[in-house]
Length: 640
Image 1 (cartoon, helix red, strand yellow):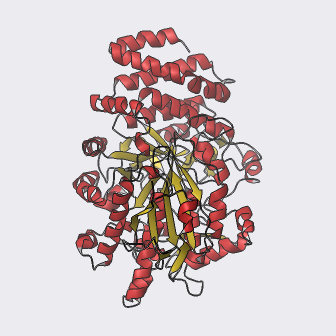
Image 2 (cartoon, helix red, strand yellow; image 1 turned 30 degrees about the vertical axis):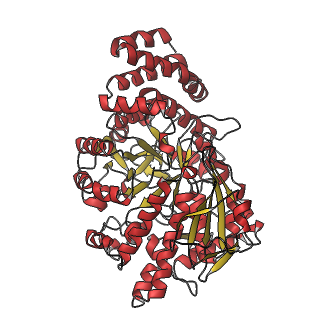
């Protein structure tokens, strides 16, 4: 890397103080830039020249960064744990389904503030291809917003509104592939060899056949196989759908173009980039082509270069992989190597739904006890539901540890939540059922999977409805307190249920995940202040969790979570600790009847002079030697 050239241009492009800060960041990050690049591209480019070019790109982005964002950068460089605060509470939605447009989102910010939200994640909104687009994940233009929701200027204005209120904005960046309508793909089809090399293209089936011997299918039902024949071009790698072309990250031009996209989005005011499909970025014959070492090197280099240009930007990994592999996307290797700042806690989500179905916490205790922690500078993102299906990622080893057969348990869960298991309260459906393997995933809104839909169908049976609302509240209570940034999926706060008309849109008819991506029901939301309505009860429950969480230093990221076994197989207990706080204990009853726990658990968790912070009913007796929890109830306790 030509440090002298960079220093000269920094002095010219930035003022003295800004240039000095940029060069200080460069000195700190230089190894994290050149190290991965040397391993990735040392055989195909002069890494010194390539790195210099990338650093100059970062310099140009830093020089173009608006003044308000530079002020945020300075604050976040001083307070590097800013995103780990216990007040960080997220909300996830599609802009169009929440409010019609980006302007509509701006008009509903008071609603989010009332709920207690400080982090807004808008699902994919960069311009997709027309027609089927995998829910917006087939991007035709990284530099434009879907015209149905607005423009880049609208996105920048929304980011400004959020920053004025102390909120942050997250959007999706699809890294692994583009739509076949993207400019790069169109130029590849037109015969430009430089753009053809930006994709993975083969002249015949020889190599695709060899790769597919070990490649799992992502969508075996609606998009079988991993390659698509494109007339005039060849066999194109298409991991997800035939209209989504996988990018060739072995080509350094792809890496540079994607870094440039990150710089541009950061300068629009985006605070968090969700890196979609990060595990898929590198392909290797004889493997499943996921979680390859080079994928981690790419993310390391992305992180270092974006931190150089926009130090306030946070990267979030969308990596739905095994717990053993997940911590690596947070830098959890043999030694800490900075990658993403955030990653989804998919295992916690799966364990919550498993426990809800079985009324038995032992699998969750075993699985959550043995996994690796997030490195302290990073954080999990915890959630109950998301826009996607639920894949029943219960490992055979975890199942065997508590006497279960992994295959049978996964099959039970998919049947239970599809409502085909006797006594199930769930109203979900199977997604991507694979007759050859017996595997199936689950679609359905959280409220429908928890039994709220079934209870309302049963003439509003008050007991069944209370139980269902408490199930959803307790699930969120765990997500809010287990450690990390909790996310509320749009509509859960008002118990929004499955969309019965999801298949009416021809673009959605073959993808039943749209049943849990309904339009926001603002008429229902208007009932949130009625304490007797379903919406009012659920909104108060989620808002209460947000208010209680904000006061608890133990719940900020960067601390530790330890399972505290109880003698009751229906009660999940865990302790949260942070170096600067009193210990915290959560106990949750995953059963249909009142359950109790020996109050000695308070001493085992290190709580002296324990006190109740928050609970399902607002009260818990602590002086009888027994902690009693109502059906599907929880309690949060802390001590000195």
